[in-house]
Amino acid sequence: MADDSSPLISVLMTSYNRFALIGEAIESVLDSDYSFFELIILDDASTDDTVAIAQAYAAKDDRIKVFVNEKNIGDYANRNKAASYATGKYLKYVDSDDRLLEGGLQYCVASMEQNAEADWAIMYEHGKIEERMYDPEEAIQKHFFSTPFLKVGPGGTIIKTVFFRNLGGYPITYGPANDMYFNLQAACAGKLLLINDCFLFYRNHEGQEGRNMYSYLYNNYRYLNHGLTQLNLPVTAAQKQWLTNKLHRRFAVNISKFFLRTLDLQKTVYAWRSAEFSGSAFLKGIFYFKQQP
Image (cartoon, rainbow, N blue to C red; front, side, top):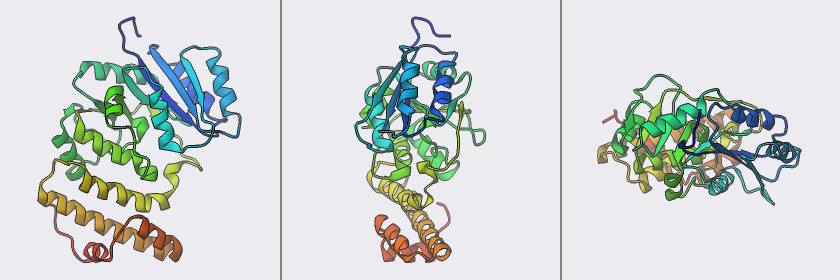
């Protein structure tokens, strides 16, 4: 349980047309064994009863604050805007179609407080990794050459508010892969704590941005290509070249598979152009690939 000296955590819940699920998401936060939180709900101009449901909960609990966009601004712009309302020491995203599991907030806050040097934490549930602090070089080397543990969405992180704001929040140019670029950027900029649990129940259903595999086709290439060229990744020149070759090969194979599966030339060309993929990169991806350095 929290006491007067406990740090405030800002739970951020963005929503769009989630009237059937948002009540359960809100209740999962209210049922938390850590009471020193604020729940910020930012609705992205829903056309159903999502806002009315959220406001009904806010009327009963002053820890809940509901904001509504006049027009739809999109997923990650909305996440950034929600974070701008936060007053807590930490940020924790809980999506309006997911559920926070028992003990989640308490464990996350306690872990961050016990590891005060950590700027952010990832909750990784896909196999055991040593639960400890990682500096930028350790995190990037482990992610690219051992276990890709940075591939988690916003709900799988807890972040110091000041760190999130110093990084400028999430980018908004990589579609459903915006979080992947942010995670690389954060891993390069600060100390990362790895937690071997998730504390969220995720729902998979139609309408989630993450289910748009076509958008992932080119945005996964774009975010990593820009990460390799724009971020100061702690890798050697040989490692960066290997990662670039691997990226070219993966996109060349994936876009070829997409075309052969769909025979949709228009979408294939659009994905190619959106990725800013060159013919030489395609040939290198198909015919040139060395072993890991």
